[in-house]
Length: 604
Image 1 (cartoon, helix red, strand yellow):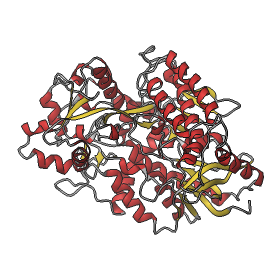
Image 2 (tube, helix red, strand yellow):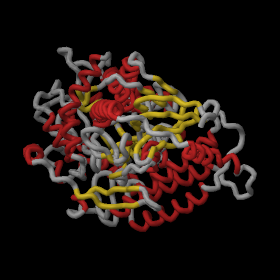
Image 3 (cartoon, one colour):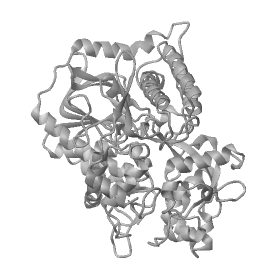
Image 4 (cartoon, rainbow, N blue to C red):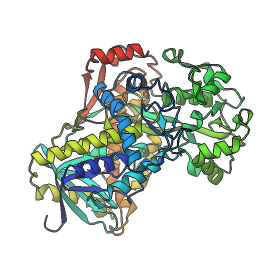
């Protein structure tokens, strides 16, 4: 152990996106020593890719909005599998977190009288998303960084966590390597907060950045933390489909929030054909009324393009599969049509959607003020993840906390757009606060030299296999995994395909045990991928196993062989825990508190 450089902190935050930064700021404000590990450089977290806005019931555009309506919308969107206590805390506290961000310097778009402007988004009854054009995540990260770097946080850039370290049942720290030289580093801490984001890169087509491989979810699982709701993966309806080099790149829901419509190759607005029963009283099949809704008419019903993401994604998939898709295998998203309604439409679009305009102009040579975009579903978000306590964000492992996308419970079976950014703020703060309290109440655990040596040896094993005749290429295994998950565990699932996926995962695990890399340890992508495969395979198995068990269709999980909801499965969450093999069990859903049940009933 003496051969490894060791850093000591009260609280270690793994991840430097919105949740990690907010957690680090709060823990530091509580007076404890905080270290924050970034896999990349500070400022390059995936949160910057969040575009549409941050959901909070400020009521600036429609004063009928309040936390109770937001609560009912979030529970309905999550198909009532949400942890209702998390939803209560979230919807009550989100407005304060957004105002706090504004006080720290976030420059939001404004209403005519100078308040924070809010826009419509799928599944939200009222305009609720505070935004900065279509660059909201970027502004959030800029603000949190500018505030956070003055809080005495030690920041470790280009470090990758290999594994968590434990003293008995509790957390003692983590082992990492620096990507520049490949040298192992030890972090000794009283508490650890995992804020590592999602796992989109285990699929072939994804809006996620390169480092969203589910690493945080996996290291928590291997440290003994429980996972829940892993079957619920959100496929965002609108990602780019052309050119191939940018396939999957996100097209914000804000395009539809500003009046964009979806059409098939026949020019038909196909979303009118399929409006779910529980949204019919809020959704209009009248084009004029839908347009008025996007322009802030309080009495108009929403257009069907602003239904929940799981539903819109399946409708798009249906059009493509039945031969009504665009030339490159998507459908058409048209915002240019608003020139019929607004005289200065091109300038209006460029002002409201500057990133989208430049994205299509530069990458696809498409002018969205004049032409339709080609779009198709892309793996975007996982509702499942690490099981946490609603109030403290502590996992089932003492001293280990989680926040953001890698933590589960808030979103249930499906996340509403915009809820992710406010999730980062609300539960990032709570995780930082709770971790600091835990650190003040506990001493550091002991580090085991044997444990550290075993983990470092395992991480270096790929170099020792370079001369083996049966060695495997890490990039090929990663590619095979992504293809398999896209084909067999995608938007629509069946028992036959899920069983095949689990069998193929066993084969991929056998191949991963033979993975090899050469060269030295500094900036070695082959080695990095070889280490990451363990995490990608772990998360993929948890998703496939949970998807096989849930024999119904709900939210982001759709079974072609069980297309309806099951009353029995609607009352349980699925949990994955570590054993000799993955253990799956059903957890009865906690009964909704009477006053919250009344809120749901009043807002149906």
